[in-house]
Length: 185
Image (cartoon, rainbow, N blue to C red; front, side, top):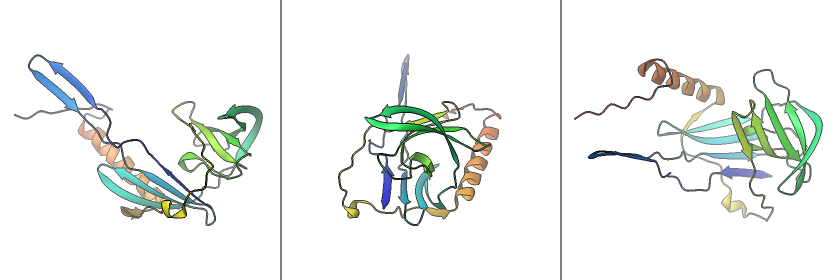
């Protein structure tokens, strides 16, 4: 069984616009064209990620995540869901999964539960992902394809590169989370 998750909405957002006197500033940013492809049989994930206007292709195995079921239940999109807490000392994640869809996968590589993860809350609300629609219709396998574009990297290599670039940008901008825009005439 294969699963492909891809952002469907348009690539470009409306941006920010500000007018002051005779000047006008417009800032537009593209959303990354990221795609995750999960091969459930071989337990591999293929991620195509855009970072700093460059494409990267990251291949990894499913993480061996250990969950503890809490016994709490609720309904998401009409599906009966159970709550599970990730047993990991580095990050806290609470997932809601449904055994009604017996596919052991979810967003951002969360997996290893006996059903589809429909919602995940990471680090107490730092990142919350919740399904807004479930479509169980048959999909033509030609529509599902592994991402192929980008520089190949392992997940640890990609994380290290992102951390180094973020640190470099922070140092260039005074060491904090400041954004400095320099206008040259």
